[in-house]
Image (cartoon, rainbow, N blue to C red; front, side, top):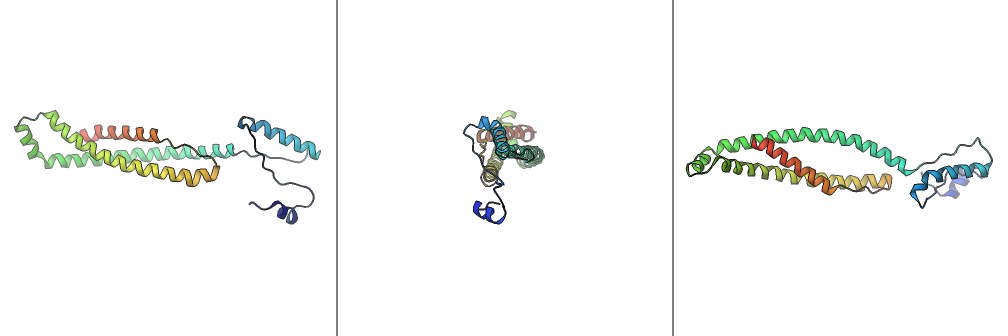
Length: 187
């Protein structure tokens, strides 16, 4: 709860006690040393060793949030793995139907001299386009949700703007698309 100091002093404080203070540090490497120095100075000023002083650094909050998101990352990765398996089976079924419906076309192509690897390449390209389209939609949704969570939650809670790994996300997504295409589409 934030309130004007004069109101807090008039309503709740009696005497010269200060319930809290905010201190900024120029060099972030000196935060721990500054916390100790402030507590020691407060004890010197009040001459009372029975008083307890606590410090709070936003880095502690950030570490806690990072731990939570680390756990969430594992859960989301597991969900993603199951989703990839389901998507792969779906692609495999679609390609099976596609090959089954095109047996005449495959026969005509073979009759006019198409080799097995050319026919396989045709269906492989179809599977790659199918996976690539799904990959593009999923990537756009994932990055959009990530950017929204970043700006609406993380920045507001911690005051820290974590970078979104755009290139890493794109590369990982593209690699998984190729792997799913190779494994399930070719099969």
